[in-house]
Figure (cartoon, rainbow, N blue to C red):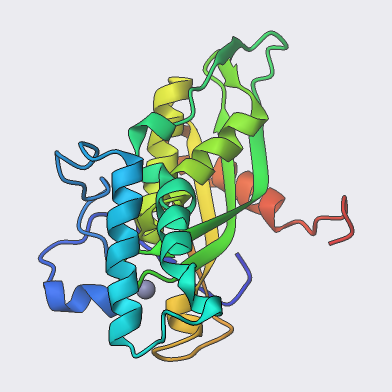
Length: 236
Ligand SMILES: [Zn+2]
């Protein structure tokens, strides 16, 4: 990876001080921290309650909610949270992946690169967006390419920490494809870094997870070389 970026470790961090978590963007676990009763409330009730509380936040900020431009915002935000940007919290929205036999006996690396995703930093609730690059070597089964994209979107659509998202995507693919031969690289911009705090508009964050054959230097290099090749297919 040649770009200006910080390569974060995806190893579990130990002895975390909670106060250090927010601006350092450290995750406490690879599981999204959800309560056991997270989905006892249905989506409609969630939207109603979020709209109510968001209206309150806007009101506290001093905004005039009778203004035509602001009136619909609480409902709009609530719908966007539940049905779109955080829809990946709900396991019922998890993509079901159909496996196919690897009929062509293609035993080389398959890379799906430049998967655009939009997520949200769970420490600031502002966007993280970027590209995910995913690769695997088949153990005899393959999945449709669009499925890889959907798995990335599912894990992106929740309050996230980039390292956790990287590992969650890798673990899901390992489970579905029944192989450890999976590599995931995520290159992202964090709005909480670019638009506030240190205000660094140029920095990007890279995270990676390599397992199975991807722990092997040559395989890893082949994957990284491929994703770093300029994309000439659509003029970028
Ligand atoms: Zn943040």
